[in-house]
Length: 313
Image 1 (cartoon, one colour):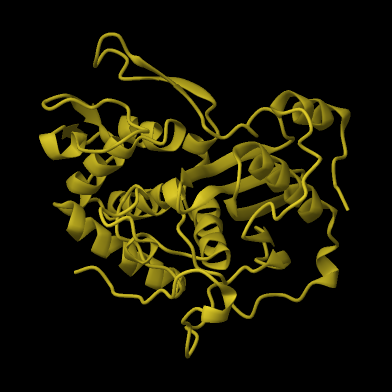
Image 2 (cartoon, one colour):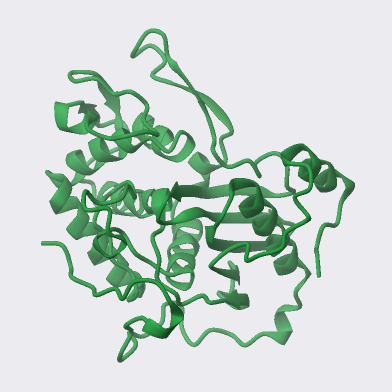
């Protein structure tokens, strides 16, 4: 069943790729749809499978930064001077150069719009004192939110040097939906993820760098205002998406799609499915954030690598 309700979105599909509807194989590895206000799960498919979130990881980087701002440890205007280690990231990058200085908020825009891996390193170093210390904070936040099937090992979602999936950032759609719901309800994340185009470094570098949001649903799908896309070879194409229509807001997390266009189509169809759902037909969650499960390791029979959680030190 397809939930393509408007001629506008039909035109969007045509503009994305001819023949996108002729899908013959799996179009994602796992996905979940939630109602943002209640936390009700409206649809799930393999939602507890563990896989890399790629650049969606930057949403947790924002969550930790937001905590430190609320604690008064720094502000969005806090200047961050780039050091050489910040520049040792592969694309997507905003091209930070040693001794450049930007307010933290400028780096947040770069993370959320341009998915700048170098900006995420600079934020992590400034907030945590070092990137490894910041990663510890990320995992502490994950535990606090009930993300017990999640481990972070970077602030930007890049693959580890070993290129082994088990050594990198790992999560599940269900866990990541918890993070998205927290950010939507308790932070101003949508201020940054809803921006489609922006210049980076106005009056701070010459020329400023144009940025275009990697989220192609912005401005094309009714109500979409975030959150974050991601891609690596190991993760596939991922997306945490949200849209608001009237008094309803839906969250979709889709992971492991084989292509950008297919991911965008599936994410949009899942948003439509969420808005079409009758909330009364779905059970309310037991709590805002679930109690820790007694035994959360992945099922080897599900395929893929057997992943053991070792918390970064």
